[in-house]
Length: 230
Image 1 (cartoon, one colour):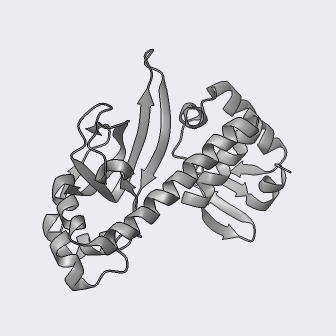
Image 2 (cartoon, one colour; image 1 turned 60 degrees about the horizontal axis):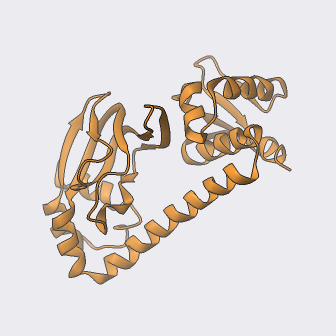
Image 3 (tube, one colour; image 1 turned 135 degrees about the horizontal axis):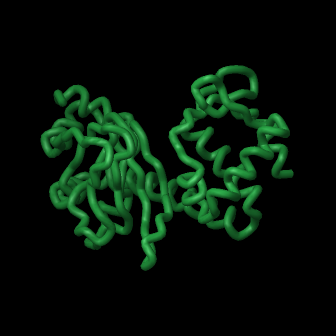
């Protein structure tokens, strides 16, 4: 990747968006890029944290496994996302697996070099704190969803969250969500079962709250789906 493309990607992040070209120059010098094929693991749960990654192209699945090998999807990240968020400030091991679910090009910055840069640029630290704060709020919301809502409601909340993150508005109140997720993956995102997700999606289709187009993408009646929670 050329330096201009790297800068454009990094400055699409809240962390870097307000920096000048001059301020970005040393960060770009620290940055490297690499192409990853689908199915490749960028890091494994328990590996040392060495880099922070920024997605230029493709999708990355972040997931954990328990002692029995059961998979729990934490997040599915795409273009414009960064991970792992905690990498800047923790000398620790990777808390989850990161697997390429769609051929990807990533920009990455070695953590030890970036931390040295941050120590000399406290204003960047303040912006990073905001990014981490937004992540904490999102995790709190997910925890509340599991505590306060039944499986049916959790699946609706998941669909709404995916629509907010990845959906495309195609008409008044209607959003298209590319169906890149199997029912098993959707279930793993909320700790449910594939059967429960399948049953709920069928029910939502009967109620005409969601449908699918010729390509299998979800068509979400967002406002009506939100009203289903109240």
